[in-house]
Amino acid sequence: MGNNIVTFEKKWLDKLIPMRFKINYWLLKNLGLEGFRILFALGGAFLTVLIYEFLI
Image (cartoon, rainbow, N blue to C red; front, side):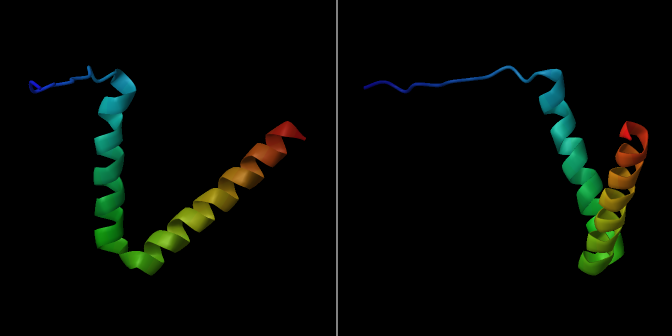
């Protein structure tokens, strides 16, 4: 049986994913685990309130 090589072309959205990981890694390295958690918990709460206010 020969070697089967499968390749995929990356779409534009797939190219953005490594940037997201780089940003998250930088934030995690600079804020620490607890600071990272607090930042995203507050960000999630802020987005929830913002969306709630615009929809109601």
